[in-house]
Image 1 (cartoon, helix red, strand yellow):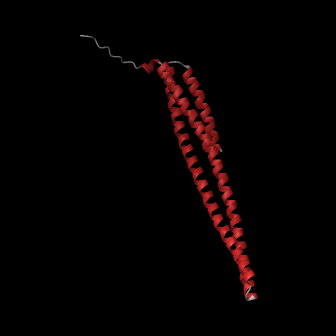
Image 2: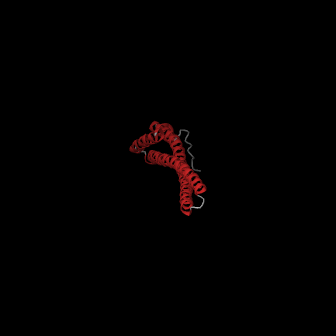
Length: 175
């Protein structure tokens, strides 16, 4: 009968560099998870801000339509004549309401532009986080190749990619 040899020592115990690489891979994975969540939240914030901007522009359009209708009404009341005092009073009321809608529309336009700026800022932030996420994933994979090849340049390349990813992610979180 063939003898069966049982190894009691694990392979990783004889490779302290491999142990350190494993710990670094775990840390990269944790950072990657945080950056991924941040990236997803930034994309969501972009969509919300853009939707709010679109809502404001729709509201702006409604105010402008009301403003135009009152302008037309004032012009028609003046043109049709009739009882001069009542026509003048009606036209004056229309002009007053038109001016009110114009002021409200201008305020809404300012708010809509602010939401568009916020949306663009969030999109840039999400892009930085996405780039950081990509480099962190690359660092994770490159570092993991050490365990297949036992070549030390893979963790060095992976660590470099991870550092680049951390820098991009930090910029994304801080902006």
